[in-house]
Image (tube, rainbow, N blue to C red; front, top):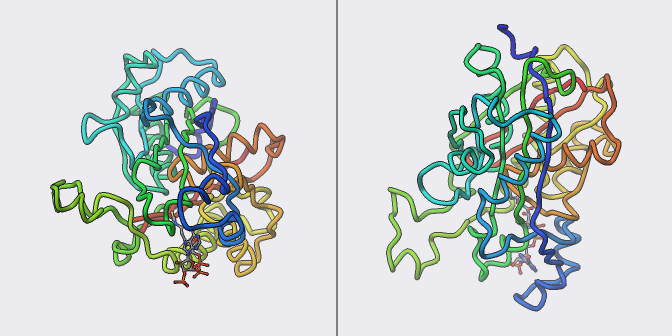
Length: 329
Ligand SMILES: CC(C)(COP(=O)(O)OP(=O)(O)OC[C@H]1O[C@@H](n2cnc3c(N)ncnc32)[C@H](O)[C@@H]1OP(=O)(O)O)[C@@H](O)C(=O)NCCC(=O)NCCS
């Protein structure tokens, strides 16, 4: 066992909180309109976790669904990698909290932070742990209660994000979702375009940082928009080249669900037919790391995945980071 291309997806699942917050609900809370949100982003509604629900609660539900789908005993999981930027607490890792609750008592567990690209980074890390012989069965969970990071006084970010979790079980025996190629990238020259300034070691939480609302997400929307369009096109092109495939051999694209206009612009600029993109941003908005696995599971539930298909997963986010993979279904 020495190649990442032997690794596939044995099972997958997702969970979104029950509470639906429609754009029209936000009209009552801030100076925004359903029309602005819909036409600028493609979002119609999002799911918001309850006050009593933490990121690990969402992750546990998605993980249990993935384990059931794979028909795998949690005690046989060797490793849990949780991608999140909204952990339950600074430490321990949310992956440890998930490990306890799903009964994966033989697994090592750690978190990984690549913000909206987190699932791809965790997926590639987990697959490499299998291909290098360090693990046989890896649970990759992407879970976010991203609404806990949003400033309710900032309409330019508050309307964009929602909560949710997606999970996959990776094994070398799985027949579906076999990895053909991957790429991960980072350009830290764009750090300031998307970040939470306070609450870490650089700017520990203080009365002042709270009064200045520095513990919430800050974003330069237009810069992230341009980066998103470019990185979707360029990273799909990179993984296709690495796979020895061309665009015509790509059957379905599961993109990060950040803004429908980013997807439409990437489709036009890079000659990727829009009908090949799976889109569910209307229902869930941007769930950060959870967005790609939620879309992947929904694509399967909607009958969009068929044996033999070539599927691209592609994402981008703060860091700036990006990642993509080609899978054979
Ligand atoms: C945020 C984003 C939707 C803004 O869209 P946009 O087309 O650039 O917006 P526009 O420039 O046309 O409009 C900006 C105006 O809308 C206003 N506006 C911002 N949010 C608004 C809201 N929720 N409701 C109403 N008006 C809003 C702004 O105040 C600004 O008004 P002004 O021109 O009077 O100053 C877009 O830049 C974007 O999607 N960027 C990428 C975000 C992203 O994907 N982030 C996550 C990455 S992982």
